Image (cartoon, rainbow, N blue to C red):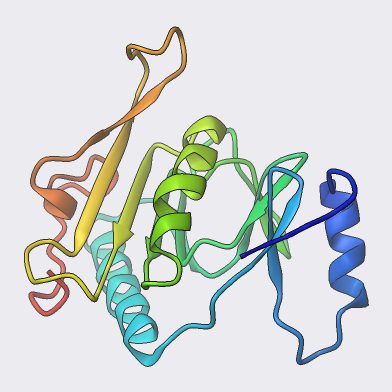
Length: 192
């Protein structure tokens, strides 16, 4: 998935690279100064994204939570990392993230990646620590190919852990319904 470069690419380099792409070329992500080509979404992936987005938006309306959820927008996490999560939520109380016209700068409160066989490892091993280091409070990985009851891995950021002062993610027992960002959310049974 990664593209080899002679040097680390910054966000400014990445933006210049995007400007040089032809309209039909796939858009990469920037991970730790290297380009990463994203897999194209399948119909199953698109349906999962749509259904999770609808459930989150319904929960936000019902709970009158001030914030916004965005599908597939660029999130600038640091000087060398720009990711495009499938879904990202920014609460209006989040003082670390700025919603700009083109992207989110800083860590969203919540991010969801919808995995496929081609992205499963990248979502779990590369994006997971990038979101953690940046300060994303909750990270969900949804995998539509897994059996019912095993499709969501949900993690919440904890401020202490066994690795010095570095925060850790811990699993959210009970999955999405036990989310601290969206407590009590009811996702459609077909997703679970």
